[in-house]
Image 1 (cartoon, helix red, strand yellow):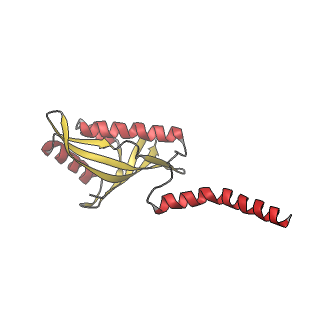
Image 2: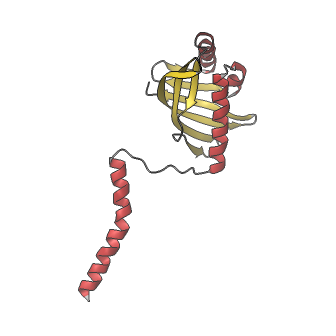
Image 3: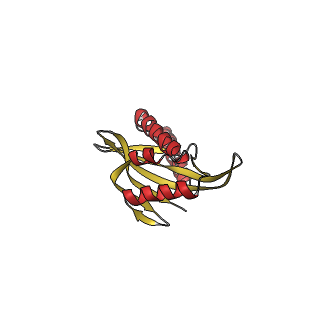
Length: 166
């Protein structure tokens, strides 16, 4: 009887620990667990706002770009440093003037959104910057980003940006 009990106990331990072992193996192999949004509604809202941001960037719509960021913006870029709202808008204007054929694209399947209690949301992901030549995207580079979205009285706006891995 003791042998049967020990065998059953061992079987339960194996069944319970197998998923933990598999998760640890995935983690140690550089794989993260499948992302599932905490709130589908929040994810969809931020995805929509992100599409407005990308469209404004790609159509060089500085007025819309200005409306999507808070005036106390902090934009951290690993290669160029920290910029506030006015410097960021000047940088967008410079980009639009000197690099008319640049396109910003969200890398599919890489966006994650997490709520920030009583504030807004964290968005992370990968975006590509490409040169458009004769209707074909060329010289694409993928870079990581983190946006802090703030829910304001006038809508969702980005208050902090971290752009890295350039």
